[in-house]
Length: 68
Image (cartoon, rainbow, N blue to C red; front, side, top):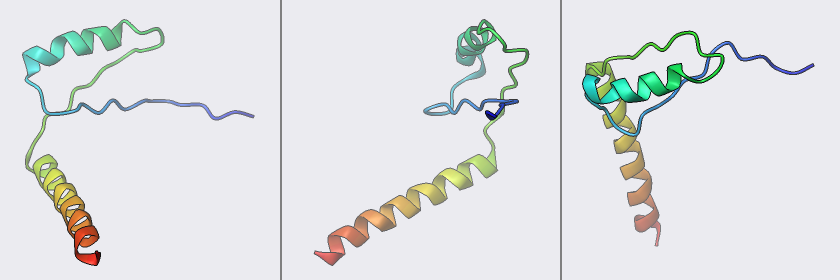
């Protein structure tokens, strides 16, 4: 038996303006089987998560250089 998906999440490379996202949203809606596209607004939680992820990556990179 195979898995069945009820949703797919699309992550954008960077935050984009609402009017710029319209073309992407419209294109996704044209894909067969898509019934709804819901945009999510970037907020403080998003900024904090990005900051933490960047910091973790910086720490890993610095650790590599310190080990040598």
